[in-house]
Length: 471
View (cartoon, helix red, strand yellow):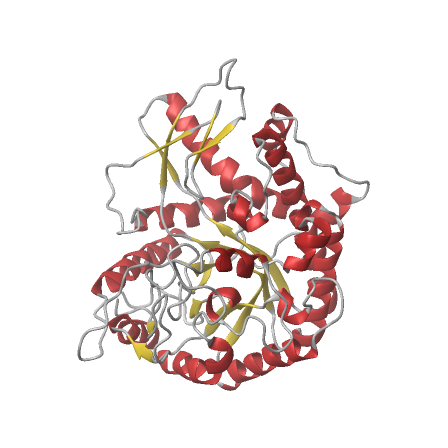
């Protein structure tokens, strides 16, 4: 294994504000869409009011990051902590909080890798504009981005602007889409998606303008789809599943325009978003500098023909926040060749190698893995330990895939798995844990919130110490 990872490889771990911070209404913070949705589930699982309580434990937690040996920490700022209503008065207390966190990271030799928007749109923008449906939200994001660049740009060089837009746009709850008519909902969805592309481009342009050597890019929910059979139609369906879920998004960030197949889909559905003169110039000027990618599983698809009752492009959601059938394109299928976690995600390290090679061959940009991990119901033993060998096996397999991708010629900057510590899972609360550090609480009992190093903590610590030589 010697020398399989470059000497400057960025070993780290990740989190997001609403899933880790808590202090949801402290220090002048406003409510977010993520807060609103978590409160709706608070009768049956944990919500974002306390989460992992990073807001009050950040010094202790950064100390654990240093002990782990992390080179980078990928975390998100809460827009509503900095501008509580999204586009109004600036909250100095929020800026001070993040300034202190960033300074502490740097003092401990950890490079901050900052996400600007991770599912937590200020709820006031929903009330005022229905969020991303209105173009005013685009300019609100640009203003927020410029403020962050001006305040933190001398300390933060890598900015990951929007997390998983390509996944978020398919989840009505995260976009606050409440329209019952499927066509009207998809028309709103297409406009929101387009506005987020504009916002990303404006923010990327501002990053380049305001920060010397500043780098801006998206984090995509990566997809690798296998055909159910070797029938040509199924092979095409698998390719289109990846294109419709992920590649169109990367193409927009790189080329500044929708690829032909995606524009055809928008026209088939009669949902082409409203565009203004000058938008094309904005989109092209905001080209991404790198690709951050989140990888958990692979998919499988077969061809789903269209007919008179089900026209091409019509989508049918199947109860899962990710999967849907699309007439004339693809139908999601189960891959019987892969094992799955207890929460249904199929485990496939080879898929990560495929994704890394695919994206690098398309764009020839450096990449960073910003999410990859295994959510499980970890058990705290009587002697205060967490024996998570399953997580070690999972990450070891995916790091081996990273090493092979590097040998393939992929420019991979680093690996920052999900997550540094246990945090609030959107739909499973604290029953589903991803962290290297256990947070001693459950959904309805905060207990003492003690931080406990899992077996995977010590294993990953050694991986970092040996620069991946000992997996």
